[in-house]
Image (tube, rainbow, N blue to C red; front, side):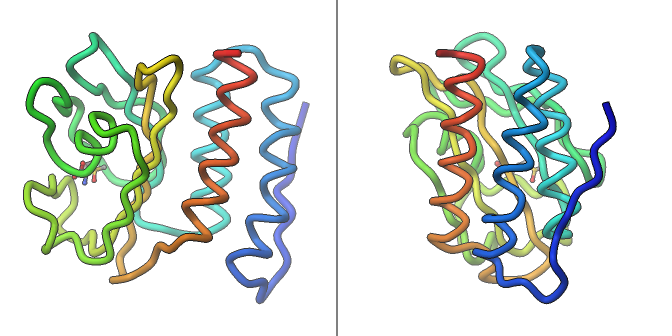
Length: 166
Ligand code: SME
């Protein structure tokens, strides 16, 4: 099946999410493999917003996140989250909450996979108290992410959760 992403020109961030979330749902509707769906979600979010890096880290062994499907430059492969969390991804996986980081230089312990990254959002997918994976998006600009991103990305991951961990 082929899919062409439809995004209106000059749309606001909220409008872009309104357009792509149903498309993401449609894409994952027809595929039961988690990795394939995470790969397409990373591709859609990356194409829609043009950030520096868009991708997933998945819970490897209950202590470490390992690099999953992503779009963007080469990234670090392993990030510990228990017992001592590292970076924004580790903190999000450990505390099981969304982190919006307006300026990565002001986040103690931020892992600079790319020195070009200026701000970041990380959203966890938690099932029965266990963090299964996190979505990480890095931007070239300061203050790129806000509550609109948090709400829409959490809604999108809820959909992944019901499809793959329901
Ligand atoms: N900056 C992240 C690490 C992952 S990369 O940026 C792709 C962090 O601090 O957890």
